[in-house]
Image (cartoon, rainbow, N blue to C red; front, side, top):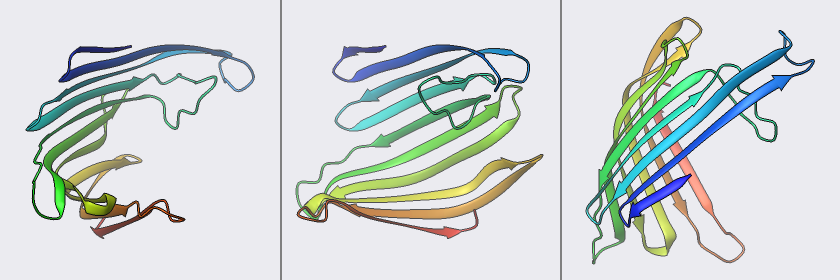
Length: 173
């Protein structure tokens, strides 16, 4: 469902159940649920978002693709919103973003908190910069930490070239 109590806030949520049987399930039957909730607030000078997602270990989608099951995802981000009247950029958003993922038993899969900046300019130009310091991700039984910077640039020039995009990353990942 989606609920918009006013022009500045929205709540989006979904709850799904799956009951899978057949030859592709080892124990003959598997039941699970998946849920997501997204709270978003935006005014002229700032925005903020909270997101939660739970995909049960046995969840299967009959008519969709679920790349991973058995995890919980928590996400938060917030940023300031500037609309310069002069200069090349028409929208600038410095922000902070965080992700935290666990398996169903609570073991950390991903931990990430980083600052960044996003800007939109003339000629449909978009520029993004994120500084990931101390991002942790699970590989097997180990939680590996890496630090890197990511820059992305995109433009929609029009004509026979509808979209151009480039991304660069420095550091270890």
